[in-house]
Image (cartoon, rainbow, N blue to C red; front, side, top):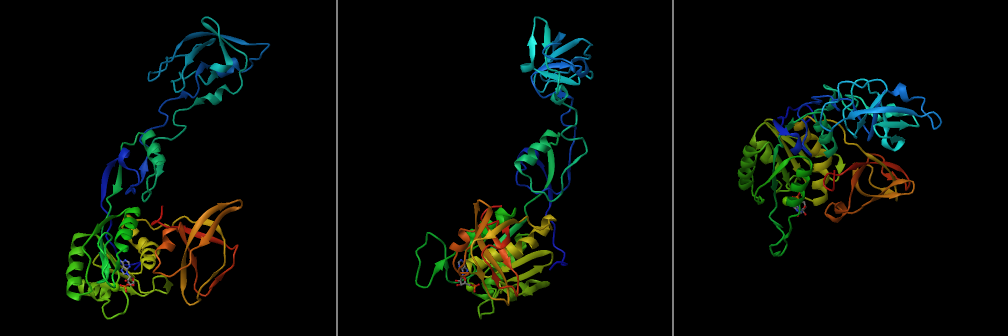
Length: 396
Ligand code: AMP
Ligand code: MG
């Protein structure tokens, strides 16, 4: 799967003001210096620092106030020796002004200003480009833009960025027993919870999920539904039917649709043993087990990294270090993913394992992330430091 070439999301131009949560398709660099001119970062009097350096209570320095700096206007061309300029926070400074005395440390004296403390006046000057310099690399391709990153780009004069268009991901839910919420349950029927959960999880990962009508456990109907989903989307996620039962058609339907078809069927991991990883042409296809916990965990842990390759994102997610609140005992013949709930304690984060079967959606409903118990480990003692991978289906 790692080597099979997948299609890339298309780039599009997006105004920075509308780019929150978007994934950059190209590096974003500063268009201008920020700040664009040398300015005061306090309300006060612009001075030549050296002229006030020695000012004390006993030996104050008295400077003529030669004028005012207005906001949004150019600085006066020159600051003459023996003078100062009244300047507001953010006001432009003339080249000679390398210090600003805070208004609180100065006394206005009818056209003059008296300064009794000349220390630290240079700290009140922000040099042009001190924040960001034109051409600086601000955000790399593949970055998901946060509100703060948007502020940084806007401050550096960036009006538009190139972001990936969200790839369209079809969701096909299979199973004769499934009924959506709001429709009365008949005998033997259960709620289709994956439809809503997978849609929300894919959206949280940055994709454009597209829901299709439920697919009955019927080969011909499944073939037709898959062909349509594949034709209309960049990728397909299938819930259910991935196992080896008589009516588990997922692998056959994918294989029949075109090469390379199924690349992996079955993983040595729990939950998710019957997962299917596939592609038709350059479109990834992920076959998830129908059990609600398996479906979301496999999408998160195995499907997501494959789907994110369409955004050129290959980095590992950041993890949180936490102390396990109670022991975990699982079989040693598989890799296990255990949902955990995080709380903050006096010594840092604590991870409470949420144990249950793959059919119990409530264990994921309370989870903040997943921990991995590798094959052959089986036991983790209470108090063990574990790495928690944040879970998209709860919050990024
Ligand atoms: P399957 O993977 O199709 O063999 O389904 C495995 C189990 O998950 C069965 O008990 C199904 O009833 C259940 N299941 C399948 N699809 C869903 C769904 N969309 N929502 C909730 N449970 C499901
Ligand atoms: Mg089924």
